[in-house]
Length: 154
Image (cartoon, rainbow, N blue to C red; front, side, top):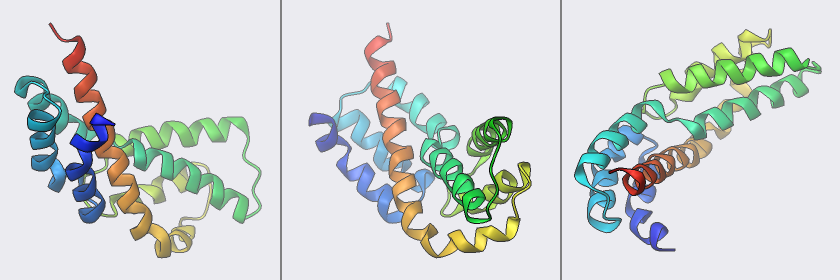
């Protein structure tokens, strides 16, 4: 409960802006002042996480690819599902922390297993709403990682 109280400003900002990069100053403030993470740890982990830790995006893209496959009537093999997982991991690491960046990488994920790139148009109407939630999940992951690293650092 203490975490949620301390993280609330950053999570609300992430939800409102859909940008982990724009949320970074507030994330650092919450980590250092409310959650008492050392400036050395938070100053390293949070910016790194804002760029590389896109776990909300990865979860969304994997689920969306499976949804599209089901929608077009394609039964994916285990190998194709593993390719989706690998592509999603790589795409989420390279995705910028800006609103709707996941839609660009979603095309790559769909095409990696032969799904039509045009299916992105089906996902667009709900993307803005889901993007806010994905960003909040990404920022939460950055904050939890900072807390864990701070707890176990010497």
